Length: 181
Image (cartoon, rainbow, N blue to C red):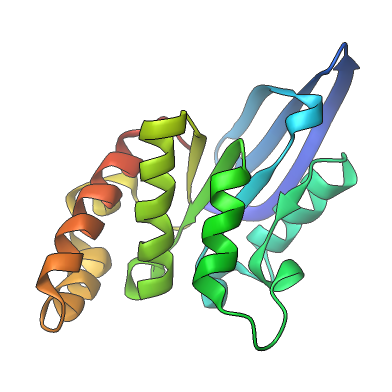
């Protein structure tokens, strides 16, 4: 299980490229990921279920990225009261070069998260958006196979919106198949 401990352990700027190492710890392992992105095109979107991770893991991840100069979109930092959430987030996803999806126990209970996920996977396919899934206190197979809490949450949605749930299921399966932490 991942903890809320996130840090960026190194950055290097070299001719319009930014290289950085991202370190995420869980109880038994430390994941160190090397990322290289075009410096002038840096834009990253964090997709997460607010009630699960906003004030812990996701906030720490946001601050670690922001401190290193990574232009990071997080919904409560940019969206103002009265703005529509969906178009603002969708626009950020379309303009971004990278997305980190923080899957958590109740991620799939949120229609907003699932709509975002469909948009992210669409951009992944069409414009080669770089997508990094992070599995925070949830097993990747639970998201991929829609079992456990994820399956129960989707079943509740399916009672009211069967067609939309099909696209959500496909997006969850595809995102959970990507290499992640």
